[in-house]
Length: 552
Image 1 (cartoon, rainbow, N blue to C red):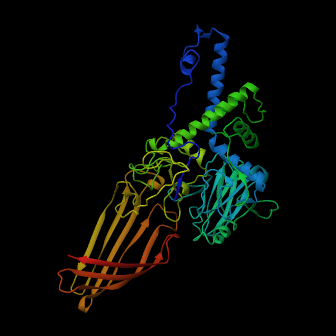
Image 2 (tube, rainbow, N blue to C red):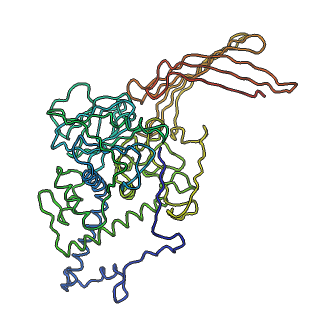
């Protein structure tokens, strides 16, 4: 999990918040009143000026909505162009922030707690692209509309979405991946994890990890272990550009040049078949595949104003995202949930990887705008809190009093460690299933087992539960309060990937029951050691259990 705070540096905390109001016309009426009362007769405008005002407003409104809708793509293309201008372009070029991200790199979500590595490829130039992914990597693959690439099927019939490495099908062991364009009919070699891209452009994003800021080398070596090359033809040597100390600018603008960048993307890639209505909006402001984008001076002025307005709208959504329905983690704090969640549920999201409502399939437009005006990259892992797999974010724009976070202030963050009673450690789904108990109690030996299987009522994907458990208990009593025991739980997650379902520990230990002084209480101390004979890849080979109990 990553925790981010956004600090402003312009508005003074003591300033009064400006009140948003409709722009006024000379006669005192609002802008909207003017539009609504323009003279019409028999369904036609009666004044030439009315027609011009409405045409300008329509162009402005369409441009404003296009700006908001296209944020995922222009965010991506700004990184591609900005980093490409500074460090070079090509499938083999990876910008590696070997000393972590610093203020001289202007980019969204500039976290400094990992080693970042960013690459950009073009399938129209390379054809199917192979990635040799090293072990112990966390990475993802997005297309240029910021949609995670669809990968192999999981046992629950869903697909891996974007993730490679730990959260991907190689489970951190490393493997060969191949990225093909949508509709590809060619042959794919055996043994490759196949990912499909809807755009020619492919974003290759990696994260490298380190244990100490005094030694970043493990993280750098991790991301520089990847190899990217075409399936066919000569492979260029990898070019890892160290970027931490070099000034670079990878942000999109909020003036008319935003639309010029959007046009460069549209012209450079294939026609997207998703959301044809909004592509019609693009065409209505002059952006269309194969057509030169040449707005008139007046249209460019409107595009300037539309971009400034839309950017402010997006920033306003973000700054007040804690007021969105299901937009916060905890009701008494201001930490916001990018993909929406129920209160106190850090394990699940109400939106999917494309910010669509999991029940209706409709895009949550505010959540998507919030994501891509301030952040980049998406995959299933980026929305997950599973230790060793996930990288879910918690963001804050306000302090505990509801004031915007400002750069000139100093803030304190209080961390509360969750306990086993915290529902975020469970599935947060009502589950039912049968249980059975078998137990024998004798003078020397006691033992038994509790067998259970639970199924969730509702939920899909990561929100679904189908879990088997068998807790087995065996005791053998020895003289003077000593005993031998084996007390542990074997589990099977039937929804996990093939080969990752079972967790079976084998082992045991011993302990002693005793009193201290002349007190009436008894105490019990035990120590056990287990070898995990069958386990998911993310679990270690051994575990030790130490217990101390007070017996009333």
